[in-house]
Each structure stands twice: as structure tokens, then as C-alpha cells.
Image 1 (spheres, rainbow, N blue to C red):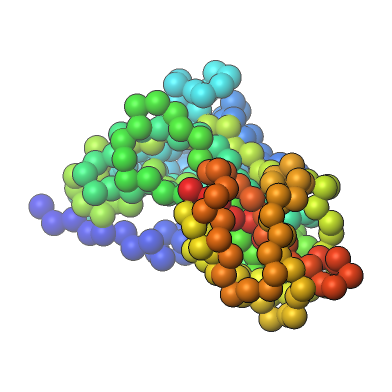
Image 2 (cartoon, rainbow, N blue to C red):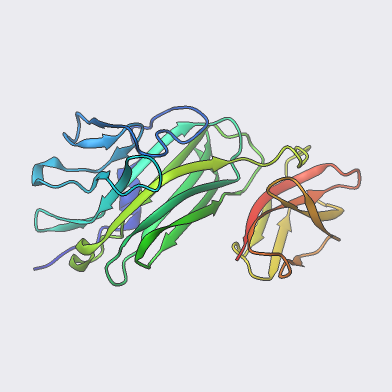
Length: 276
């Protein structure tokens, strides 16, 4: 029987509607609240949207009674729909923010079919323009929860007005992927410590590769006098002279901030990176 791959871009087009505009933190982040959705006729986590199809007697997104904390989590199962399309569990939310989050964290576990992938993707927008994004993916089956940390990388210094989180329980590329099932719980946004000075002027700052295990390339459209590396608690731990690349191989694994400074110590640009 022939099956069809559901392209990732098509999934993104599917979810570009009906945002939930809510408070600064992730809505219903531990998936303790569920309600019947009038559009899909299925239970959905409050504050989130799915692509559930009740007509076929099964749902891609459903309650999980195997939480990291609390009583419930969110399960995403890949289903074979109408003998035509393999559709993964799709979960997404859009909510209002006024500050620039530095990371998205959460917990994930589950069983994936061979060569399948589960994905968490976060975007931060100003109006309709994406000004920051990051993603986490895994191709491994996880019997126990692991914590994922998604650094959000920014292309500018605008203040955002919304954040979107997308979770795919699998890619839905072959019939074999119907064996895939993922569970997520306890999403949270983290924000830069007040120990890091605020940005005084705008610059386009890019760094790569991110995550990195050693050399980190730094690119900016502004002239700067030094590069500082901060911990997420606001402690300055390294300083570099202006350079196209810096060596961070001596840092322990974790999250950090790159900060560009002018000759008066003002912050020209700031972004996060992960040392793996």
C-alpha cells in the first residue's frame, strides 16, 4: 500500500492559524488542563492546538498518564490516516511575550521508529517577522525523560511580541513511523540574568556553530572592542579581543551568552550559545 510523506513545510503551513495569545510564560506548560475542542471533537491541552482528527477513531495528541511531574503529560502518536497519509502528532501554541527569552526547556521521552525524528521548534516574533529561533530534535528512543535545552538565537535586537512552540512527535515519512510515540512535559522559557547589561544599540550578531565544542565564529555588522562570555546567572567568565573566532573548548558543557562591548563597556549585541 502506497503512503505519502508529509513535507515539513506543509506541516508549518498547517499550523499557521488560530494563535493563543496568553501571558509571558508557556501556557499550560505541564499539560495538567485539557478540554474538548469544538473544531476537532477531541480532547486537547488548554492553550495549545493540534491536528487531531476524531473521524478516524484515534487521536494523534492525547493525555499521557506518565508525567515528569504532576498528574499528566502530553503524548504525540503517529497515525495512518484514511489509508493514505502517515500523520505525526502535531502540537503548537502561540502566546504573547514582551521580553526576549534566552532558552526553551522541557522534558521528552518516547519510542521512535527506525529513522524517525521528533522535534521541538521555537520561534520569537516581532509583528510577523521571526527575530529569534531554535530547535531540538532526537532520533533515539528514550525510555526515561531527558531534559532538552533550546538556545534561542536572535538576528536583531527588537523587543518581541509573541512566541510560538511547535512539537512534532515524528516526521510521518513512512508507514513504519506509525510505531512512533513521544511524550513531552514541563515546558519553560528562561530569560537573561539582570547581571548582564542591557543592549545600548542594535547590531546584527550571528554565531556558529551552535552548539559548539570548541571554536565559535562571531560575526557582527558593528565595530566592537571586546567579546565577553557570561554564564546564565550573569557571571562574566571570559573576555576576548575582537576576533572572527573564539575558543570556548575549556568551558564545561552548558548554556552561555556572548556579549559584544564597545570601548565604553556598552553592550552592542548579545546572544546565547550551547557548549556541548
